[in-house]
Amino acid sequence: MTANVKNGTPFHGPSLCETCTHAHIERGYRASEKRVFCAAHEPAHAVPFAMHECTSYRDKTRQSLWEMEQVAWLLAPRGSKREAGFIRANELRKKGNEVELILDHEN
Image (cartoon, rainbow, N blue to C red; front, side, top):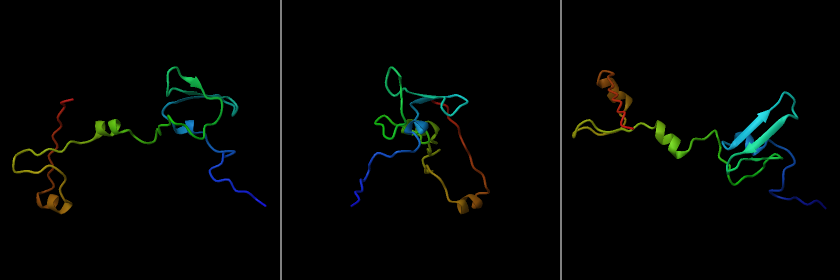
């Protein structure tokens, strides 16, 4: 008889810390020379083993809402008759390929 355990503890795999923004990873020249520190809470603490799951994990390959807002374009109308937003490519060709970009440095 065999027993299958779903969502059991994996025996191998990359540590979750490898892709976490809170991780500080120090690597030496040898494979055994590696130290991982977690700065999710103060004070930062050493992580002695590869992490599989963490409640403070934040993926460094994805931007937070605040980071996305910092690079977002605000689209506002220039006058009362114009609408804010993007226009279709065929409408741009009719207008002679002219695009006006106004940078406002309010922040």
